[in-house]
Length: 468
Image (cartoon, rainbow, N blue to C red; front, side, top):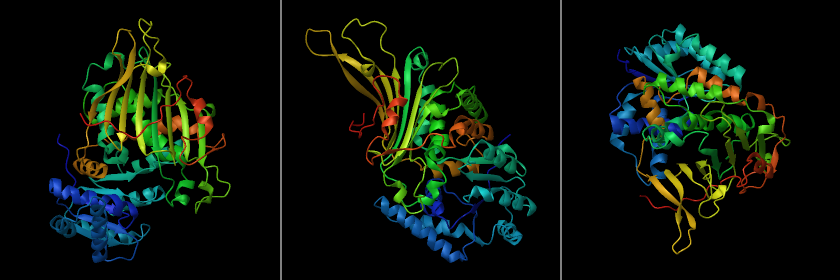
């Protein structure tokens, strides 16, 4: 049975930073690329008029265009502006949703996008139902999907009071990135890798998400989150699932989510001994941060996945702010040959696969080749398999388009959310105090002890390879 396309977009939180930085540019791009044409009803409690909203949208596009050395496509903006509607009101006031119902007009299948605090999800969902705006509708909610396992379960239960699970789209923009999707394609479109993608040949896996900047004035926000909640439980465990999952039985969303769920449930729950938390020097001086804050701006951990494929293979994951560069990179270290026929190959000189997910897109293989001369000795080389810098859809353009079409392939399910929280739930209460580290370093000294192999962490370097 064909999936019905949404015939209106309702955007709660339309005057906020997310709308300014991401949503309006995404909608403009959808008009330019796909001819998006549907009512866009923006809702906020800001005392604005429709003209003020349109001006805010134009300012957003001008800001985004300037960053790319371009100007606003005024023809596309005229189409966007013509579709914009504005409802100003309190989310706790039934009159707001009566006005929404009127603004929807003849639309029967709206997509409600909640870019608002999770504490308001239940209020808005129930009000949509009472106003008759939830029938045949879909709802998109932004992360965080809870703060721990218990709150995630409560949040899912609240949403399920109004919307069936197939109509709930939990948006994690990281899953909309082209390089992250390429991990899945790379694995299952190339049969050459499957025979070695297991504990017989893989020695360890490292995932590093580094940010060269700090909390950028968001001290109050970060104090309530920390690195584990901000990027580990969602982004990095999602990347791990794409690296480690078995092939889905089909390319439909249900099959993909089934394999990811099986993988999440096989992740061994983290214990405090598996985790090192760090905090960069100067974080406590940031406005909004407590002077005795124990919130981590860096986390490093060792994770095991108890499946036949990955038994005994450590997954080392780290993420942090104020590190030497901004990048996300995966290193899959292969085991050394069982015998040294030629030169003595050490673990650090063995084969590997490297995936650079940002800011460049690189897939590479580490190998050894013979040195020139008579001696049978070699040097390590890296073979770049893919290095693509072609302009792509932004994650929000891709994910919003998918949600409007009803395609939830790149959205996470209720069970996957809860299974991911179960992995980190035991280490959320700060049993281990944060360890200080200097800005510009690779984190606290204690992070080195997370990796048990002699070569330690692979510190990503600035990408210098030329496109193939």
